[in-house]
Length: 481
Image (tube, rainbow, N blue to C red; front, side, top):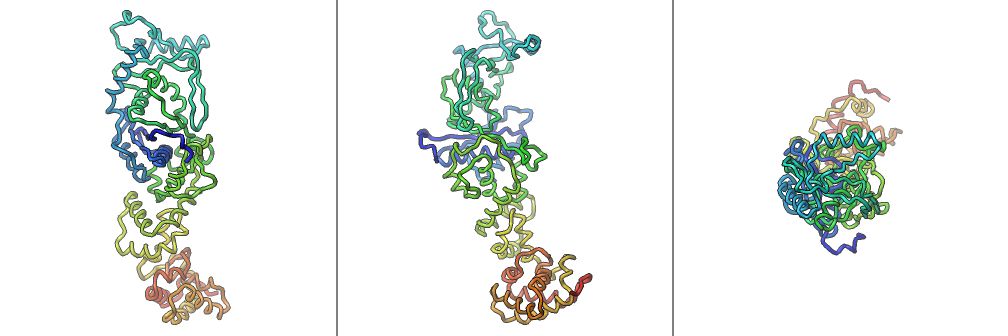
């Protein structure tokens, strides 16, 4: 890691709004925060920003929790509900009012809109300047009011962002933002600052769509005399066409990736590489990511969601996973996809096939598809295309093969040599025996190596399946060569 200068314990957070599914971009932001904190022995916190009570739902909150748990992003302490802290937010707004850092504004919406219309007509900035900013409290009416924080009228606000670099904002472009509404409820811009301060957040790692908020939120930090956190605004995720990620690009919610059968560790790996790099490393473990991750590795350009790369990364992880871990991942995927659990017998059959199939799978469902030969029960009913390989010549070859397998050493090289001698004696290629063997053993044209299947199935089951195919005669529609 490149952050040896950090002396205070690192505290990061993820603060999603529970207004829908857990977006893949939110998952990536959570991962960056988790990696940064956990890699430095710090804390990672969860805060649910549910101040928008009309749109926030318990179901969306549950989706966030489930998504984080699936990704393996554990958080410290209890999840904090922002709406539960409304009294604290209001307390801070009134504290700023008491010190003169904020003021009561009695302007109505009609007056504000009239101000802006006049500004547009005169070619001036429509940034609202309240006449109540410096009004004598003795002149205050007995009427509803909001509390606005006083923004500086000149000079500049500088943000030293760990990703975007030095960002400068002219203070005359900052409005006196509302921190407390007339009904006494806090605004998001106030609540996020108070919560980050009270939770001890040292590093705010979030999407760069929040960069414009940072200077405005700094008004609250300054008014209260609080230290600002370190900011790192990360570029958003785009689709393969370079445009902002939307439904047309495919899966947006984490639950969709769960349902598609990507292992959680593979998803962590892929999301980590969306906008962050460690040299040329593409496939790595979570432990390596924890050791390597730093803010300097985050690029300024938007990352592009690429399903081909995701499939590649996922396949690499599946190939490296221990068989027991794969079986557990498959069980979790089936549960998430609301599929029935595998029977103990099917689980054992799947386990027997994993060593020969996991190197070519891209997602967890691929394993079940590739293991069908092991999980199938006799008699094997060949698919129409596979059945065409069971012509008279091929069945004759299978009949010749059977007695030679009776007492053969059940090893791949031995089995391949026996099959090779039989087709060679007939002046045929190995494919002439491989195709009918696929049909006999699996009933399909696309399978693992026939000799690997024979090893997994064992002598007794292999011979029984070959005998079934040979004794049933040439399939309807099969032709002799």
